[in-house]
Amino acid sequence: MSKKTFFLPDLGEGLPDATIVEWHVKEGDVIKLDDNLVSMETAKAVVDVPSPVSGKVTKLAGAAGDIIITGSMLAEFEMDMSMPQRAEGQDTGHHHGGGHSVGSHDPAPDDKVVASSEGGAIADTDEKQPEASNTNAKADAGTVVGAMQVGDSVRSEAAMAVGGVKAVPAVRAMARKLGIDIARVRASGPDGTVTMQDVKQAAADPSQLAPAGAPKVTAAGLREQFQAARAADAAPAQRSTLSQGGKPMRTQPPSVAASGQPEQLKGVRRNMARVMSDAHAKVVPTTLVDDADLHAWIGKQDITARLVRAIVAACKQVPALNAWFDGEKLTRTLHPHVDIGIAVDTDDGLFVPALRNADMLDAAGVRAGIQRLRAQVEDRSIPQGELMGYTISLSNFGMFAGRYATPVVVPPCVAIIGAGKLSHDVVAVIGGIEVHRRLPISLTFDHRACTGGEAARFLKALLDDMGRPN
Image 1: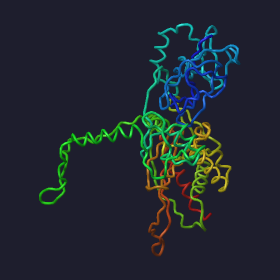
Image 2: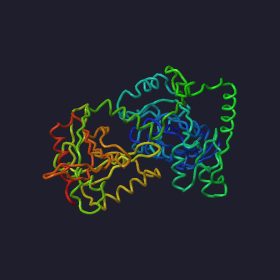
Image 3: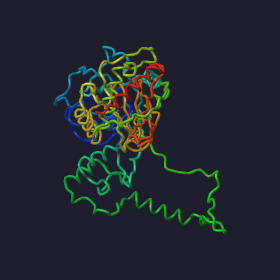
Image 4: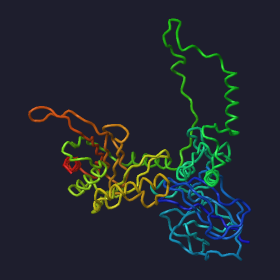
């Protein structure tokens, strides 16, 4: 049998890594071509990766919760040529793995490469790979914006503990989707981690759920309780928080630092950290703020739909802010359509799905589109294509708190609108004062791509539309 190595393909637009959610096979199993091999969580979705060959699984790169670098080994196989196989050299249009990154040249004709249906490159491991070329590829990782990182390391991380339950975000999303209280699911994973299989079994057989309100008892929990009790026995007596005069006093000197358990970022939060860092390094942000006066509104109206309509009106009047900007080439692309990125906050991190063709939608269409995007984000079923390509952004942070903000502009977009918390303000009018409903608006724009005058006119057009009766 011929041995083959499968490298993790790029599961998104240039994402440098992905987290293992669940293996659908174990070492020694026989798998068929295109059967599900593993579920991987990226910054955008949970993706099922199919097997690129038919044969016996000889090695798997890591366990649930491990981070795999894009382009590194994911699995090894012994191909069974009596079973269906993909044609040697068949190309699916994606080029990944083995140091062959996005934007690089195609392999030489003499190289033996098999491409999977998901874009993973499979290199023949019977021949020893040159070390020098691999080293050079690793040295170059991360030096080109948008290029795929290359490496062969697998970094382990613990599942995030929230509410006393340890589980990866994808497992939590699945539990919410199936209507399962994850706190009642019996954990079978390492250190008391709830796995995807645990959630599925609980959904199929609710009798396996722990009684409501019952504490989850795991080996990790018992160990933590034991360690806490032992530490309490060894700790010196605590100082009183009150002085002899009965007044509060400091229990620790100012030099003592607070301590906590470091937590490895992953999935959505990991990608959010990268995106924010990249935006901070590339954009020259400037923010204008003002208030939209809603006093003339007639009846109850959908504020988000009105915001979308006002953004569309402003984009038509000042197209400079409905644009993309390339800081490397100093080029600007003005868009005739308006695709609005709607920021959606989740426990796992920030998603920004695109409301496509907002300039063609009425209020009902806007509301239906936003509800669809939110539902897809919540159950992590949103297509990757819906999380990119928007032309301008909206952050409705006022749903929670805050009047004004400096939202982050994410390249290649040049502007983002922030809507603050609705308030009732005292406004001076001719002949006296009145109380008006007003919505704080913040406009952050990349000053390299548009002028302050363009931004101010854009903001005025938005405020004018928001102030109309209906």
